[in-house]
Length: 482
Image (tube, rainbow, N blue to C red):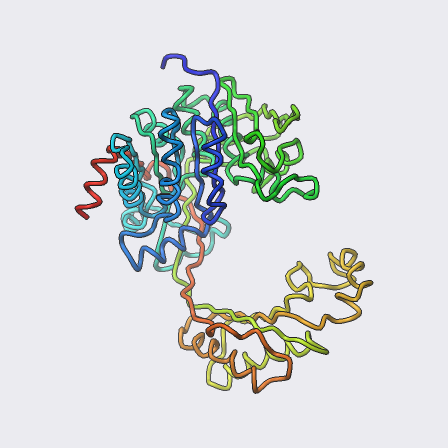
């Protein structure tokens, strides 16, 4: 491939489904980007999308993306070189692409090439794969037999199909489940034309992708010394400026809130890393032990030194299976002895479900406001005992019990009717329990079906990816026909 630019500027405007809706727009307007990536898929997101697809075969993608794309159209028109790569396709990349195409066509951008990538969805192929020897044992507990039925099973694809889509002229690339960092690796491979066995360069691009994949986590979000972070309300989202030689500068748009320094980058560097000498991705096995992090000042941090080895022979698979029903409800309990009253109310709810003939499989009573959410709870001997000491001195917790707590009672059972009865036992507490119970202003809790996460692996040779590309005009016509 002919030598191209010496660097590429990739910004990530979303770290999960539900992230700041304005971040991609501000980043595209002010980031001077070559590529805008939008990362939407956390481990359990596909389970939520599976719920949607079960109700509607045309659903199963991230609905935020088409709406975000409409708002990005002015930037796409003003910046002809700007491209978008996203995993918003979820369980239905083609449907997502069709809706995106309609918005582009309506805006007079019908010539825009849109690619969608499939092959990660293994659900229709499970019988075939099991017959070929794939066992789908639990990733962390190989001895556990898998559930009898999955509702979703998606392999983590790598960067190759993204690069192929960009090589083919796509301006918008919509994938399903790919590794988060691969959203950055794909554009880097497209721009630089590195060899697919140049493991150090793949490691460099994967490191850049890892640092920006969670959005504002690397620009001040979750920073330990949070008081030092300026203008959280307008926090800028990250940009990786990756060079042909593998060096990378992490930065953010000028004038935006937040900050990028050695501390924010180092904290994100360690995020979700098990073995720092062998961080497994579909593209490369990443060795982070020699990474150098240099603060260049003015929200610019240079990282270099990642090393790479060949990736594992298997791909991670994100599966979900139906696993009973759950519900939770909240009540506010006020007055003297509020924690004691609240716990008593929680026990009443569970006892009354038992009197109705149901012994719930799992229940939990939480007293929010008594430090129940902290690991170990409030206890002078517990891990947060010292932290709680100042609060104890002011009487807000500890020696003087709080006079207002939120009671939260949760339950799970394989029987929907048991959870339905559990949900009905909250409102009677208002008049048949102790005084001081309030906060029951909404409707009663409702049972919800539970989809549980089941991580597994599959041989990468059995997961071929497919890239399809059409113009927005062609895809929009397909949407109308559908």
